[in-house]
Length: 133
Image (cartoon, rainbow, N blue to C red):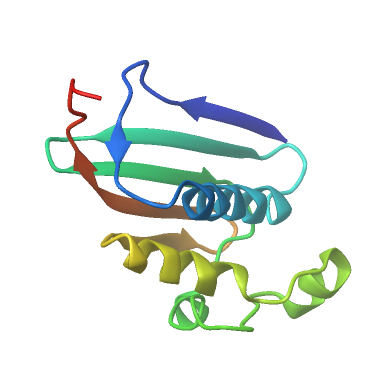
């Protein structure tokens, strides 16, 4: 499995709790890796415009059916219970991720297709860093 990143050299700032945001991104990456078979790819990208920072985690994993997408952010819900039983997990990660994003006045969205992979997009409000310390 390949892990790639597409991150600009420019620093992008959001206002938030650093450890919570770290946990959010690391959870999305860990899920992507867990559900992507060998030979697949996980791509982490960071994009921005004047108002938003966009963190995207895309994988070529097993994907999530439209029926399951309705429940994916609920506590204790696991997409593939057989796979989850083998790899661990409580079904709390995406519920916590969604709560963290909402706490930071952002949005978390999902696009996914079975056997083609998933794309999780985090939108967070950007702040302009003041030159004064």
